[in-house]
Image (cartoon, rainbow, N blue to C red; front, side, top):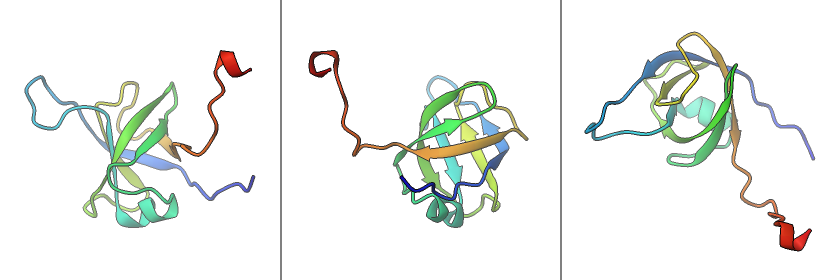
Length: 101
């Protein structure tokens, strides 16, 4: 399998939503260029790998975000200035369950 170009990104801002907020849940915001490099699209799920853990988050494309940066919302274990990597969820891979092993 070919290795894809996936440079690290820096968290430039963190948003922590509150109960009752219209927009809640894990989300990663990045600009169009960074989304194109990683072949991710609006509302697609990606793995966000941070320094302590990884979590699934929806992609939101926002060209106000600087190149090389991301805004993280409700992603546990991330803080501003930390480095993350985004990995597209592979929905084409076969899932092996214990009954098929």
